[in-house]
Image 1 (cartoon, rainbow, N blue to C red):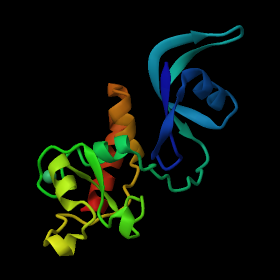
Image 2 (cartoon, rainbow, N blue to C red):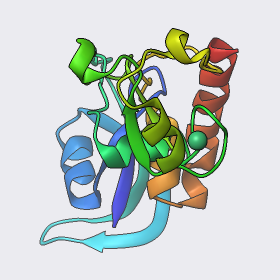
Image 3 (spheres, protein in one colour):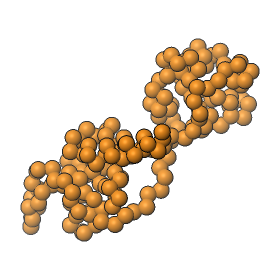
Image 4 (cartoon, helix red, strand yellow):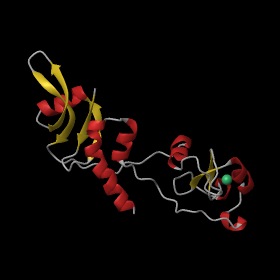
Length: 171
Ligand SMILES: [Zn+2]
């Protein structure tokens, strides 16, 4: 069983085992805001298993970064070639590595085999190509991540407001 942990601001922080969430509650670090309906028995107590807990004290979370891998880049760009919009499953360095381009989110896109091959070690300007978007490091939106990985209807009301909040910031 898994439990959603919210920061004191109600921002989703992550997912822990229900056992660990109970320890947080018993030690006074968190309060249950939604119970799963299941009862947990231990030697001395019977308690409602928490589905969502809220930290009693706000903790500062350092900005999380998404590592750049083939998988994370393909996922981020939805397998869409940055140059022609068709299906792509290769990574392309916008400024080619041979010409000093870095392997980082602000220089890597997804490309189809054809575009990648055609582009080779050229710069976009040399081909008259343009990127249809600005390159930047992706934000890790914890709420989206949680709803992608764990489909718990009970958590929706806690993760959805944050996704909305993020969309507004992005828009
Ligand atoms: Zn292409």
